[in-house]
Image (cartoon, rainbow, N blue to C red; front, side):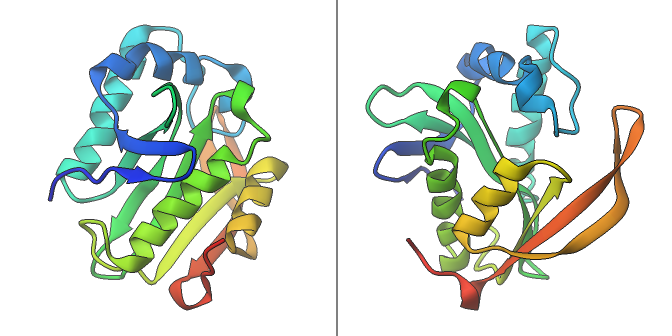
Length: 185
């Protein structure tokens, strides 16, 4: 299957390419973006190039997908979203997303996540039609929790110390969305 390009009113979601390295570096070299992320702040451009290769390898291996989020009018890269992993057999996936801080609070990440969730539940992706999508947040990441709730995810509980990065354990709040409960906005 070719890489799916998705659109919303304001956004185009497409494949990350090496030309996105500078923009991805800008995104992940920002302390506020990686505050709750399992990545250290980027200090070298090669880290961005390597991450693009990693994201694209997930699609090539049919184990996940990551889109570049671009403003439709200008084609400007503003973030990424996708499924970190998916299981066609179990019909589920784990969601991830990030956005440049100057675009926070505009509903753009919510719009992007709605579109990829819809694609997954309609069977428009190479993983086939999914039944469940999970999103995890680090405790205290209220903006991410708000996004998930707006899309229709339900809080399912806290998995204590289930994440480990930046030399510490993290409690993760689990959110789930079942296809039968999804309502498009």
